[in-house]
Image (cartoon, rainbow, N blue to C red; front, side, top):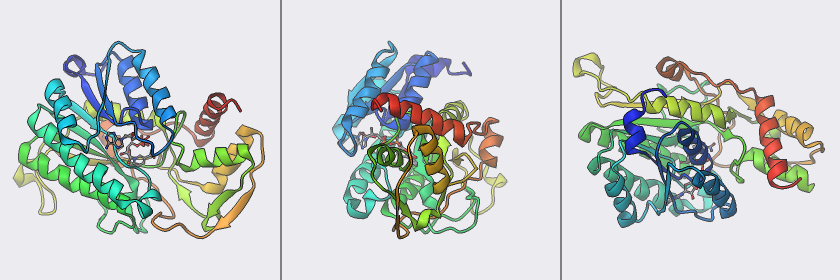
Length: 341
Ligand SMILES: NC(=O)c1ccc[n+]([C@@H]2O[C@H](COP(=O)([O-])OP(=O)(O)OC[C@H]3O[C@@H](n4cnc5c(N)ncnc54)[C@H](O)[C@@H]3O)[C@@H](O)[C@H]2O)c1
């Protein structure tokens, strides 16, 4: 194990541990022998049965402790932070999804802004040395320069979800500067894989194909996404845990950069795929043809995402390795097994 001895004993706190990414990260760390303290409120944004199924797998590990906690409830989250005092916190709990934010913005205010403030306070007061937290590729909003670089301006979010994720980056920077714990922001790009999220494209397409329902092709299918396989995401985050950013001496930085031990990374495959290609791959894996219907470009969603990951590769000597063919095959195999198709 790469230098996680201290953390292994004191534990790694993962919020949103019953979620898609949180579950996979926790399972990987537990297999490595870490102690994981997981929390989640198991909300019903999508099938809580899937969250319970993930938790059941985590509970098979001795090193796992779970607390059903709502991060928007200050007393609940404060109690866990105070009791555990974990040096590493990976914050993944959030109200996710661009489309849901069009009609339910207040869910994002609650979980992503109020809840995130409570996580920052927990880190500040209870011994956190390195906070890693989920941001999103959606912060790039209306940007047209591809690939998206962490050096690009991200001041024009086009969904409220993206606005809350960008706000998290700014809120975290202020805490990092003032209270001097290391912070790493993770801009995830369309993560997919087994036990994935039922509200995301790959899952929705598989469901539609299997149930004989038409797939809605937004913008005539002329959209591209940097689909990033879950194992690659977990590998990147696991390595980043061991690489907390260092502060920078004031004389070493220019005016637009702070001195705090703060850094943001794109976590993406850096190889965009069209939606039509994804549908074709799924048809092959599920052995059935899709029917499609055309839909206008979706409000709030960007037409293409594409991650520049040179900074990430320089920091942790890693680039995603899973091809889209192999990733979709693994997802489809899990889907068929889990749903008995
Ligand atoms: N999956 C992706 O492609 C993707 C892309 C960009 C960003 N992200 C971000 O990564 C993080 C993890 O995403 P995911 O795909 O695993 O989503 P997910 O919805 O599967 O997991 C989030 C978990 O957080 C929990 N949660 C939500 N609100 C909570 C609250 N108030 N208190 C406690 N728990 C709460 C949910 O019950 C869920 O289990 C999220 O912050 C998401 O916005 C994900």
